[in-house]
Image (cartoon, rainbow, N blue to C red):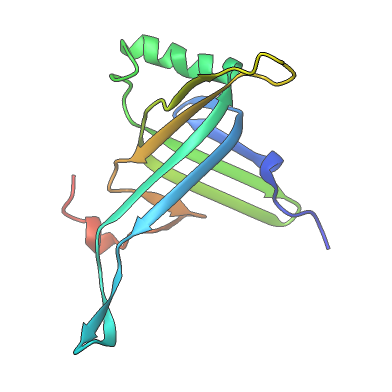
Length: 150
């Protein structure tokens, strides 16, 4: 039994920035629902699909994002970017891509006066591109769903 992928194996690229994250998550909300006929399950219907996530970074990595925002003119003007997450150990790999991620700031700063821990900053994001998410190169959305969206 070889190594398994763990949190320490994940590298994150925000656009062209290598960011070391304390925590990182992506969630998909897929509104696919059961179709019913007279109250009995009878297939399914597609619904809305959206995605969001959050990164938590220390101040050193937060300042890399601040520099990108400064170049853009403000955090609000920071253009959506792609997030690429790669992990590889022995013969196990995982590649997750999220496209058109628009950052926000939720916890700008959280201080514990006792010290002993680095300052952390939480940045939620929404996935805004019809390219949406790819998992090991496989798109989450079917190409028929996005072919006329641009």
